[in-house]
Length: 299
Ligand code: PAF
Image 1: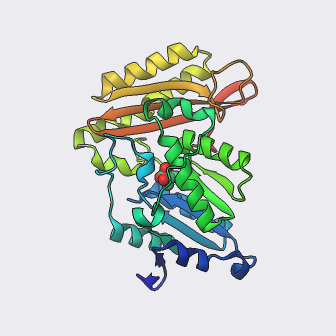
Image 2 (image 1 turned 90 degrees about the vertical axis):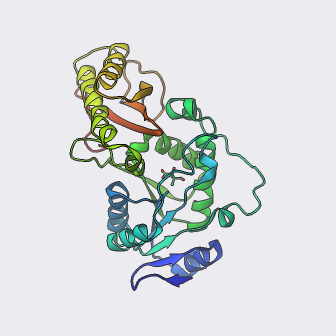
């Protein structure tokens, strides 16, 4: 273990982190955990803010997890900047930053896989086979290493969050999962580490994703049927950007089932590809007085 600044402690090995966070030694001190793949932005810092409000110690991990990237995906080009991340995490008040290497996390990987719940077949799961197996594998490892009281996940990755909630429930994992609202740029684009890989014109065009979702959510609140909404959202994005639609879907949340009468929460979600950069976004709506309205608490 070594100290990179007077405040934050940067730890690279599992053994040292486990020793540091041993429950017998930390007694009643609570640990809030923010797992990330780094290249931090305000979305991550918002997770830290929530974790700080609710816990005594905040632990963040930065690990670009190869197990959740498929062949031909952007594992190599995923943005990385260790020094910048340490500085931002420190400024945000992270107490312990865990930055393991791939060898540290997967020293002798036996290839054991976790089969996620059926929610993983929808949305990103359909176009990224095996992605959520890899997410659950690393998340379980991190939960076992950190043993957090609470773990913080952003609603931009709403499907990931729903799958992790189901996983924690089904396997009686000790941590409590906390949902944190999406943080957006001024023009509405959801903050994402991948935004940095957009060209300037793609970056401008990418704002059309959220505008399209807003139009879709207004249509749903006005009683339009899912098929018409999905078509309108796709058309809007295609006519206002060079992005290629991967999917536009409308499902229940968090079950990710087809929407039927009486659904309490619904998600309008999409994935759009700009050259090599794939962006996702969503709006969740819940029923209020029998009408669906955007769920501001979650957005
Ligand atoms: O959301 C992410 O950044 C990653 O999927 C996670 C949860 C850190 C697992 O690698």
